[in-house]
Length: 216
Length: 216
DNA sequence: ATGCTAACCGACCAATCGGTCAGTCATTTC
DNA sequence: GAAATGACTGACCGATTGGTCGGTTAGCAT
Figure 1 (cartoon, rainbow over the protein chains, first blue to last red):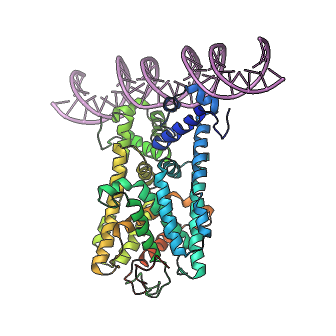
Figure 2 (cartoon, rainbow over the protein chains, first blue to last red; figure 1 turned 30 degrees about the horizontal axis):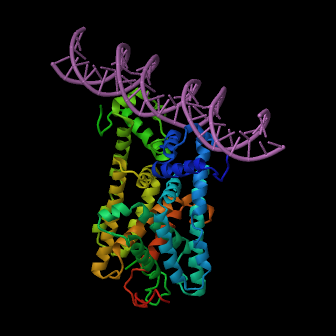
Figure 3 (tube, chains in turn yellow, purple, blue, green; figure 1 turned 180 degrees about the horizontal axis):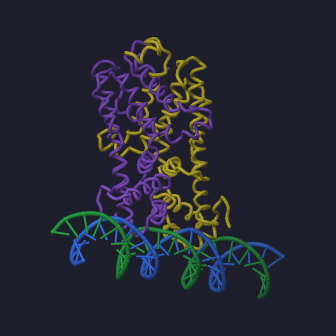
């Protein structure tokens, strides 16, 4: 029973096939037989490498999670303005999500699951990691005075993550609506949503006082 | 074979049971037998009322979609500022999502599905309806001069929808992080994310010119 | 009260599910 | 060259799946 590192070509092809199918159809819709077919091996061989279907799925998720957001953390430590960091992080993140559609889809699907299980927990950990990263970025900007101090960094982080996810999930629908089309769709959206957030969090001088706005 | 309107108490209890189970576990994880158990009827009776499991699921989705965002459209026509409309729409929407957790979960799950099918299409229609509604709100504000004219209404709409969805899906995780806790969590988030967006889209006087910001 | 229809049920079906098992084959170790 | 090990397979298992079938019951119109 191999664990965590596929050695033979067979074991690797199983993992790849499983990743593709799980990402596309979800855990329940994928049969072990179909994974075996796609991987070009016998079904029993899958149980030779992985104790059960669930173990295989966990392995797929573990790998997907490990790959996610590795480079992003480095960005935070760089020596540039928070505005630029936010721009770069957003563009990088959306690009990465789309380039790695399979694992993104795996994580987002599991994020929406209602009942608690190990896999959902992994997905939420990934979200949390990303989430706290961007909270930190906002707070960093607030401390340095680059951002206004009176907005909620957590809410901003939720909005930021949510915007990314929504764009990822609804790219096609968006194209139907003639929005964000073509090759630069991702970059275009990243820039626009950033601008939107930033112009809301720059130190205020126009601010009609954030307590009056609700009456108008 | 009943269609679209359950008449007997049995048919209704089937629909309710199916809604609950589908929302919690997803289509594939739910067996017709378990629906029958929960509804307190015989399995065969389900096939008497609904031609197949898929038809039943479609019916569940159709009903969920019809209920969604009925009242929201009226809000747009009201006679108040766009800022207030946005505030009220956001609070109302998030509250509705949480109050109707089952159907929200149904739609969000299907939104993430990769392969095209009728149900996914319904979910995307719901998203689109909500999406275009809020685009319209932003554009309305831009036309009237209440909002700045140089931001992208579509991007703002994606950010708005995405923020809502992210909050819904990650409420629990958020509570673990000591964020947005307690009864007013939803209202608190709605207000904060609105403020965030609004202060980014108010007519600018502080604006360092939206072309310079990226250098800083 | 008779006839018709829809609601409802128990028993059953073929297909598929995840998983097991006995055994083959190739490679390595001594 | 014998023994051992891990990769791999085909045949098979019990359980469960969505769905069917023949038949019973209840309500309503005539």
